[in-house]
Length: 418
Ligand code: PMP
Image (tube, rainbow, N blue to C red):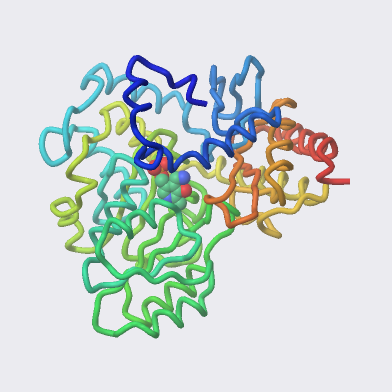
């Protein structure tokens, strides 16, 4: 392995004893990856999109491939208005801001996108971060401090866990989607300190949704505040596309909603919206908001345009749900084991028991012309390998048929289905 890493500086590394070489801790990972590549498969984590033709098609290794493993749920990345807004901002404001939102990094379109978010969510407050990861990192570490509690679902996204690690609050985990366990764990905590319950609308590994109604009721019963990450539901859950919390009638009950621009919105960035009257104070205290550069003007301009269009994207919403149902039904009928019995979101997870089967199937699909996401531990529970499919509102009926056909062929080839 080290051969390819030889540089003019190599002798310096060679003088460090292996037990003091800080890179030695990665030997296991390096060996595991090498063993996978030695088995003759492509590296599922080193895909390059050589050309992107549309929200649903790209060229990968010279081959036109249907994309079924992006989070481009609403297919906004090639929307002509979105692209025009980005180009205009690039021409007018330049390529970057060179600074933090707190200093020189707030431009017209940062204000615009926060206004678009307030209108989309119907909230009094909206704060934009540089990514969704940083929105969770910032909000969670800043909201709950020393002597307070964060209560989170065991299957929470890495950014939620990292927000917990960054802050000083006590951390309590409850069993995934278990209302009973949440109730029990909250009941064991002292009543006085502040508490933040952190939930997700859609859990992105299995594509299952949270019983938010029951969970929020339990949190309120124990005097806790609630933050819901709606990264995987924005644009297509609820009458206004606000998320699972809207779909379950919880507006006015959830204290903070976190989201991202990297999925339905179709660019990059993160945000939190809230009706809390003191919400603006987050900007004064939140390190991942303060100590990093703000998003480029072109990015916030595309986000603002996309969010405004998503408000009215009723046809797209409907089509996305049709696509999700058709793929879920098709794969169920073929005999695949899926993450959910019924189509609950735009994510459909195909569960495979071994890494060999998962990688083999992933590669077979790619050779047929279909890209899906592969997920493995630690992103998934131990011993669980997933081929994660995420539907797009722009997948055509014909593409959906081809997707199911390609799964049938690859599944038989790999003996995953009869
Ligand atoms: N929350 C959840 C639930 C996510 O799945 C992700 C990203 N996959 C994020 C937050 C982070 O979003 P971003 O890509 O904008 O950093």
